[in-house]
Image (cartoon, rainbow, N blue to C red):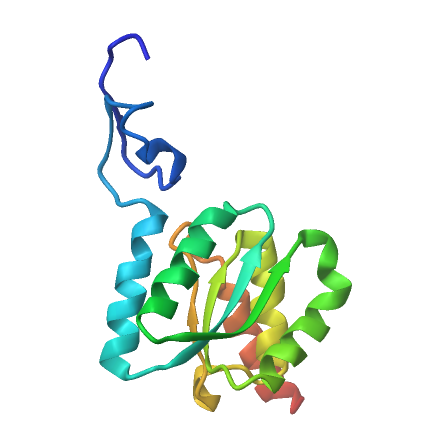
Length: 162
């Protein structure tokens, strides 16, 4: 890197954490790989013992695996896991139904925006909402207002009696 210090203000990728390969790369935000500690602390605080995982296949699987392994060491069980692609839109309904049939009420969804929208929309349709005891963890990289359509869908549902 030409002996130049590089500061990444929002880079979350785990690959750049290799200090031997990138000794002059620094971040101002933590790698997404560090979230496993926050998840474990939150799970412990609320005494949650199991969860489900929905992951975009375009996301780095080693981070997801490290999170699962860390939570397992803390006594927190993964009871449903699914990797989803944008091409799975036909199957999202089935995946959410399977998630609903599992015993998981806590969902860690590591999804990019288009897929997050499709998954959350289907989850809403099937009742996997906070009102029904579900907790969703979604990534911070989703754009502001990405879920504004959920509010509109909620109002439409009430107005149309669906």
